[in-house]
Every structure is written in C-alpha cells, then in structure tokens.
Length: 111
Image (cartoon, rainbow, N blue to C red; front, side, top):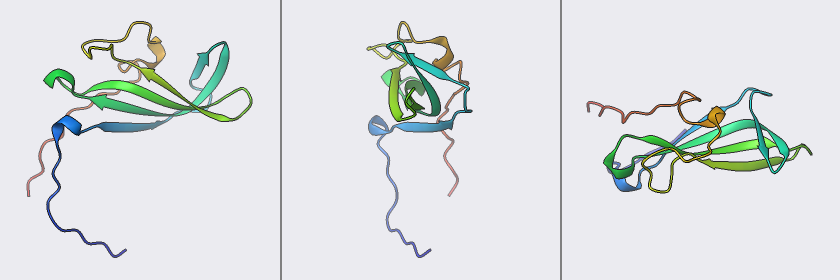
C-alpha cells in the first residue's frame, strides 16, 4: 500500500465522538418493538462526554433481522435529555452497564 500524510492530527474535544462496534451472538438478544421481535446481530455504541464529565454511553444503534428476515435499524437512547442520568424505561438488557462497556480517555502516547 502506498500511503503518505502531512501535518499533525488535531482533535477538538467538543466535537469528538467515540463509537464502539459489537458483534452479537446469534440468538443472544431479541428486541421487541410494537409487538414484533427482532434478532440483534450488531450494535454500535455512541459515547459522549457531557458537562465535562467522563465518557458515557449515550446511544446504542442495533442492526437486527425482523420476522420477515429483512435487516432493520433500531436506536435506543440511554441518557436522559439533560445527559445527567439514565433515560427512564431503558430495558435492563441493553443498558450500558449491563453490556459491560466502559471507556476511558487514552493516555497520550509518547512521541
């Protein structure tokens, strides 16, 4: 592969977003919406650092197969509208703590 780059990467903390992808075991998670069951096969978790606090899981976007076998996308908001606590009614099976996800800002690498 022929690759070159110039300059130094710069990140802006206010606009930084972290996504973590998770492949789910077949048959391991069933999501139900409007009485229909969907088998989740992948999840993408978005993290935010709201109010200067630690990185916290904000949303989970699921890829799932519906009863007809077609793929669909389902999104669950984990944090409340003020980003200071969990949203009411989030199913325990998909809350951030229950899926065992934590994130810490990486230590700077020595140059």
